[in-house]
Image (cartoon, rainbow, N blue to C red; front, side, top):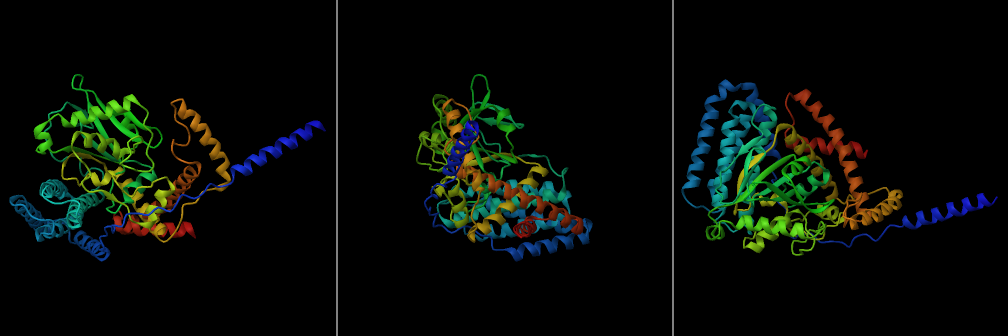
Length: 491
C-alpha cells in the first residue's frame, strides 16, 4: 500500500511538472520588416512563352536552328563589346537589350545543349562586364540594384536551366569566372586557388537554408558566408564561419566541405580598389583578425541577425566585421526583408533585424569579383526543388499561415534546452542551439517536417511531368507543382 501511495505521489509530481512545462511562453513581439518593396519579375506569361518556344525549337531540330543560334550568340558578344567600351548607367537601354538577347539565346540552347559552353562563356563575360559597370553605380539606389540583379541572377538562372535540361555530362561542375590578382597567400580548395581573405558563399541542404536564401527582397541561392585564412608560411587554409549549432568556428577545408553544400561561390576583393592599392595585404589582415578573435573567445551565433552588435555573430558578420575594421565596407546595399510571411517566420526563429546582411546579396557587391563557382547537376536540381517548395510555403505565409509545432513535445524540448545549456557551459554542443528557445526549436522541426512532406509529393509530380513532357520541369513549372503538392498535403 505504501509503495502504491509513493507511486501515485511520484506520478502526480511528474504530471504537475509536465503540465507546468506545457505552458507556452509568450509569443515573440511583433517585428516590423523593411519598408522596401520586394523585387518581382512579374513575367509569368513570358516564362510560359519561353516554354512554348523551347518545345517548338525541339520539334524543329538543332540542324535547322544552327544558323539562328550562331547569330544570337554573336549578337550577344557584340552587345557585350559595346558594354565594355564606355561607362553606362543602370537604366541604359543596352542592358535591356542584353537581357532580352541572353534569354532568347537560352531558350534555343536549352533545346540544343551542344551550344551550352558558348552560353556559359557569355554568362561569365556578362557578369564580369556588369560588375565593372556597377563600380560606377550607387548600389543603394533601386535602379542599380534591379539592373545588377536582373542581369546577373537572371543569366545565371538561365544557364542553370539549360544545364538541368542538358543532363549530368553537360559541363564541368567547376566554373572559373575571373582570375582576380591577389598578393596574399593561397591554397587549393575544390580545385581553385583560394587566397587569404577570400569569401566563400554557399548553399546548405536544410530547409532553413532555402528560407534564408529566398526570404529576402532579392531572392537568391546562397545561405551561408565564410572567410578564408591562409597561413603565409605553411599555405594551409582555415575557414572561419558561424554555425547555428556551434557559433563561430575554425574549420579545415575538409570540415567545411563535409557539411552539405549544394553550391559554393568564391568572391575576392577587386585588386584595383583604392584600399588594396594602398595595402595589398588588407584581405589577409582582415582574415587574421577574424581568426584571432575566433581563437580568443567563444562567439555565440547571432539569431537576431544584428550586424551592429559584435559579441554574437551570424555568418555574414564573420565576413563584414573584420573587413569593416580594415577599411572596406561590404554589403554596400543592405539586405532588406519585407515579405510579411518571411518576416513572421524568421521572427519565430529569433530574427529581429530585417535590414541586415545576407549571403546572397554579397554576389552583387561591385567591390567583389566572382573568381569561381562550383555546382553540379544533381545539387542544382536539389537547390531548385528546395527553392520552389520554400517559395510556395512563403506565399502561404504571406497569406497569414503560421509556423506550428506539437505543443505536447514542449516539456521535453524545455528539458533538452536545459541539458543543452549545461553542455554549452562545458564547451559542447547540445540538441538545441545556444540562443534558440525550446519553442523555436520545435517550430523549426515542424517547419522542416512540413517542407519534407511537400517536397516528397512535389518530386513525384515532377517525375510525372517529365515522363509526360519529356523534359525536366523548369523553375516556373516546379513552383506550380510545389503549390499543387502543398494544396494536396493541406487537403
